[in-house]
Structure formats: structure tokens, C-alpha cells
Length: 332
Image (cartoon, rainbow, N blue to C red; front, side, top):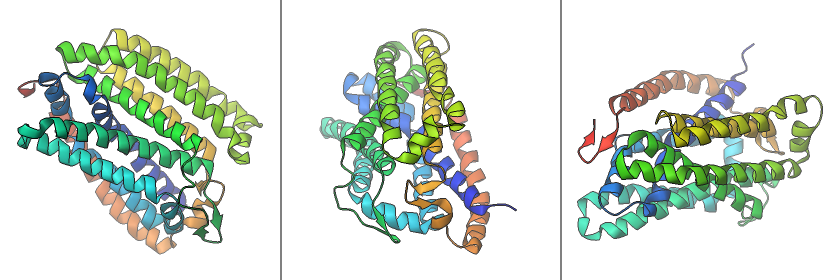
């Protein structure tokens, strides 16, 4: 028998992963923006993401909407616990989007819009990492409601995961520019990418060493038999991918550093799945306890079956059309 709850869990996980993959690099460019020279370099960096940045956030809407529709109990618990970082994330995305458009239309205040673009990107990335950390460290639940306080999300661990996401997105942004640009901006991106890779590896090591001691189930998943057999392969795979990424940044095909940086993110998301499965609120609520009625899941699955292929199709088409490198005149 098909378990619709598991299907919906994977749909939401896919939507969140797609958002991280597709919006991470353009947030990363915003994070790195002050490192680019005013004028040609900043214009090229923004032009490289102009055709795709807005559509990338479709997956964030789908992930949040899917959580509300498919797992309403989880939505009702998680939102009150994380109102502050989620509101900060949305405001960051709003400021960033407004700045993206207005820096071209209001050149007299371009410096202000550049600062807004950078600040919005950092706030959005930091908030997303804090949300992840707050979920991993656990949310106080009594019965079917959030039982904690307004500031429970703010801990050293959540700040560490927030900083880790900022560094990771910056690496994605630098590797995207290696792929999509030439000239001084391309070389600047190569120079930034290796320190960012080292920073991300340190962040992965810190968070990975910290996580098993947050919840007993995390420790069992990673260190007890037989789960340790699979878990032990993760550090090895991260190390191998990191070595290839380091080498690719120095030379080789320009698209390879970006692909390998995405692979690092993919491995961290697999590690996250190993830790929390099958909970949707770690340590408190499983996906089956939080799931909507079966008829609702079937109805939504029909819509998702139609819309997801359409979204994927126009996304692939957009990236295919703008597949070349960027210069002052645009893509070529």
C-alpha cells in the first residue's frame, strides 16, 4: 500500500532542497557583493542571476505551503516557535528583491540599494540557518501546541548553523560566478572560493560534532549499530567531494566547482535526513502524527503532480536559455 504521508514528506524535502540549490547561489552573490568593485563587477554579478533569481523562490513558497497543507500540526507548532527568524527571513528577502529592482531604476541612490541587497541577503541566509538550528535543537511541545517562549530559538547552536548557511551560500555564489563570468570578476570569485570552502568544511565539522549531543535519537542514529555503518560513510564522502572541489576551483571546467559545491550541500541535507527521520518536529512529532487526512493528501497530490512538472519545465528552460557566460552586454 502506498503511504501518502511519506510521499508528501519527500515532496516537501524536495521543494526545500530545490530552494537551497537554486536560491542559495544568488543569496551568496548578495553576501559577497561588497567584495566586488562598484560598476562593472557588481553589474555583471547581478546580471548573472537576473533571469532566474525570482523564479528560484517558487520552491520556498511550495515548501511552506506544502507544510501547511500536508502537515498542518507541524505548521501550527513550528511557526509560533520560529516567528522571529521567519519574519526576519521574509523581510530580508523583501528588501533584497526591492533593492535588486531599484538599483537600476534609481541610480542616484545606488549605494543605498547595494547595501540593502547585501544586508537582505545576509539576513535571509542567517535566518534560514537559525531556523534549521532551532528545529534540530528541539521545540518544546505540550499536547498539540508549542509550549516554549519567544526567544527559545536563539542559542549558540542556532547561531552556529546560521553562520554556516551564510558561509555555504557565499561559496555557492562564488562558484556560480566562476561558471558564469570571465575577466577580473571571474578571478576574484576563484580567489574567494577556496577560503569559503575551508570555512564551510569547518562549519560542517562543528555542526556535525555538535548535533548528536542535542537529542538522544541523533546519537543513536550516528553512533549505534547498525546505523553507524551508513553514518560513517558521510565524513568520507564529504572529504572526497571537498578535495575535488578544491582542485576544481584552481583549474578545470568552470561549471565543476558549482556542481561540487552543490554536492556538498546535498551530503549535508542527507545527513540532516538521517538525524531527524521520521520526525517533522524533531523529538516531538512524527510525519504520521502531523499529517493531514488521507483525502486531503490525495487531492493535493493531484495538484502537485500537475504543477511540479510545469515548474521544473520552465525552470530548466530558463537555465538553458541563459546557459552561457555573462558580460556587460548580457548573456552570450
